[in-house]
Length: 455
Image 1 (cartoon, rainbow, N blue to C red):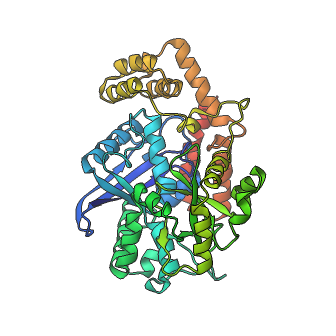
Image 2 (image 1 turned 180 degrees about the horizontal axis):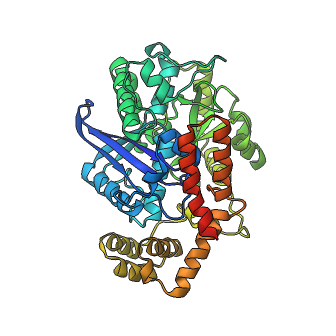
Image 3 (image 1 turned 120 degrees about the vertical axis):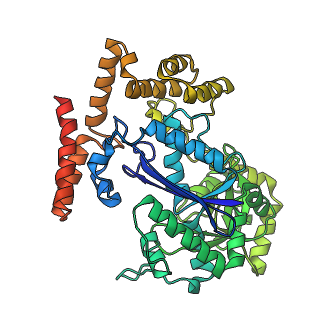
């Protein structure tokens, strides 16, 4: 299968409330020979104020944010969706991509009414994360790489430091295409230096393979990095599936406790085993290419404990219930912003068909489609898109409502997104830290546009 190495540069760190500004990708064959590359940029959406720190890190100048020569975010997402379809099937691969870039891309598709927000997982596509692979290298064969170390002795798993230390001398860090090239280099190095480990990690792209390995009840090593420390392995065993999410498996730490003590324990004890810190039972997302590796020589005690779990189906069912109950919904809590409702249910077939038409239609027809969507999330996002891209279609009342919404968005006192006040505070902090005065002046001038809009 081909690899599609990709990276995003964004307006900030929130997948729900920021947006991509750059998408770069390189398609290779299974031997990492380049087939094609793309490098796309877009304008900023009208409601988003970028993080000044993000602009400083990515090198995006404020003038680029509104450059009329660049496509809109809506057009940008259409181009990416078409590319994913054209390159399929492929393994969509990045550096910390499953935790960040993938979520950012899903939100961009969701908020721009694409019918398939999971495009990198369907139509034969799979996902893989080179950062997770590096954690496994550190655990299994640490001598294969030179590792960047801070003065306090901590190893840093940062692409812009690891790649140059390991033979990639031309890294243009914090540019999407530069990061893609560096990620491709690291992947090639792992495959060449540790082909057996690489093959083991690649097999975890397939969630069915992960689930089959887990449900064999063999002791396995789950490699993770927690709280900024070095990667570590938990030797554990499958012990259930979440009652609310079939892609979430429970993994029992075989070195932490004897599961026999929990088989007859009350539900409170089982819930504590799932929620306690450190966790006795942790969750594995089987569809996110976990670093789950075979254990060559499990101890007799690990094998005995795994056998106890294998012969306790009722216990595994209780663990599945405990996993599902970890994050209960509050029925009286106010509805979250529409952006945070992305996983609030799949679209109906009728709505999905309308979304496919929406992508091909002109804006008058798009406005009609939005009004006929059954899903209230999609109607809300659709009205926003019409206001962004075809304000002439709005009534006088609708235009006033849109302007009021923008003002509220930019000035909200407590939010998860960058507001005017937060942007000004960040800019002040950047100046105190000696940021380029020219860039600071450009950002200040750009932010004045939001202040003028308030008046």
